[in-house]
Length: 368
Ligand code: FNR
Image (cartoon, rainbow, N blue to C red):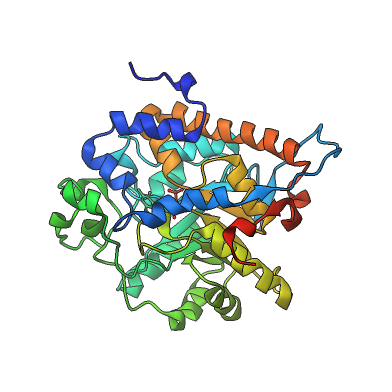
């Protein structure tokens, strides 16, 4: 007696269903975090340390939470972040996320390690819907350059370079499940022979260049006109450095708790970063995104109050897709939209620009 789709009332409900219906190996890959999964749990629980300071008697009859990210309009201040191996969860893979994103006018970030080919995902887009590319940098820079320039030609609107994964983290659940079907699930890797005894994550990541450094960033800026965003920045020092090298954005992220265990949550890092940027008058020099553990519109609103331009959501859409296919992802997005509308009203904000730091109490983060 599996719950039917209409009985999923929030994003956590999809996870519970996915856990029951997914193949064990696929569940292990999607749900695992690094080491003891402390960071993975912290990602969501960090939001519980922040409380609202709502404003009353604000006219919220009409609530508009459309916004702009990296120069493009979007209906929602969240995007579908890059998660590898969509076909583990559903035979159609990432194009399901593309179709749902189109329906709700939400931006999708395409992973380097998608199960569908990059072109299949671009082809599934409709009406000029906005897509971004997540890049794992190949040891062979000629390959990387080809990927970037192809993406730009195909109309990708931004390049997110993942910088928190010089080596993939140890995800022991995933390693135990000894995934042996990986090769057939990835189309866009370098094609190197892979060691499959270490789980899906290790098997597909051998081409990633661990020597990538700040010195390489000017090269990326020189090979594309797409805005460049560093995904996986984890402290204010590196945000300042990102501004200095001239990238257009950063994602404060710990890769969904899948890389360094005991990395701090994105929302906590955001609370560290924004006051420093404002102090220097640099807050408009760079767009700040966060991801990790975002499951409720209240999580999104907290991030926006603190100064994030937008937030990425990963696992919930994978789980909705794995459990119910396109209708599942559609409903997950609709639920978030409904939650956004209600909570914007309750906090006293009619539009995104109304959200500001005075609307949250962050003393629970212990940073004062
Ligand atoms: C990821 N993430 C990720 N990030 C990235 O830059 N490249 C990738 O290939 C992947 N692959 C991937 C697979 C799976 C199964 C997960 C769960 C995550 C990290 C992802 O972009 C994002 O940082 C987190 O998923 C955000 O946390 P939540 O929303 O999953 O809690």
